View (cartoon, rainbow, N blue to C red):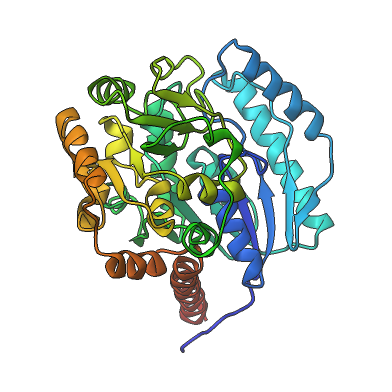
Length: 406
């Protein structure tokens, strides 16, 4: 029997980022896409993957979570409800971990009941919650693997990898954002599909189509400007590369936009040099204006296990804004090397910058076509189609087993 279902229109997103984090990533964007495509979304803020560091930022976050944990689910956008479950820090202790899981299960069931959510798709970014995924009623379970979490600082890697292995036993589908992640997940999940990170094309292309004003923050920074947008943490960004380029090209100015040390509170800071400017995080909707008034965009990634498995969120956002891109030659970007200027070394990075400043450009038609294919809308439609296929296959198998028993 060919079973086609279209009932599961609720999704429970178990995130690794709080909804109001200024640096939006897959978690928030996917929630928006689900809502725009007719789903009701219950968005669960991060429960914290890394071990807390005894610094002010962590204590402030713990305090905020204690306050938010007492609030009911509230609608942050049309069809998106957010909750911040109350969890205790220092989860390396087994008793605290078990208590947190009990609190989380109770909290989720209560909010699901309040919102009349009965059989949602569980869409998790946190592999440590495999027990919660297994125990909640659901139409299906999806693991969206967007990073090698076990390679991030202050995270116990074996716990992550054990969680992914357990999740693979119960999940119906896994999506990854890079071929490296897909290769590892294919051994654990029955179905694994790679869909790289994408961009909000309509927003970032305003840097090309709209007469955006130059941001006040840029007006006293001379040209040429290298724009970097992202978390300034040394497990992601090569600060030595920034220093090397800044010293080799003293008249070229680095403009660094993003939070300092996110995900790595003990991170060193970017070099303090006259041509390196740290502007801090900026609202997402303002980013195109910074890119419009830059001379190129850069991705000075460090090479390690984490970055070799990642697909940079900013890659297609940069391209959609119409600027030329110079980036560390990461494995995930290999298939797109005709769209940007890859650099295998510090010296290559300097050479690529000089080439762009001399006027060389990548093919604009190819870039625009790639950006359209890699928009949030296009990717979501592909992923939703695959999701329905997995749910249909699951339902068909369940009905077949029932018929066999009869």
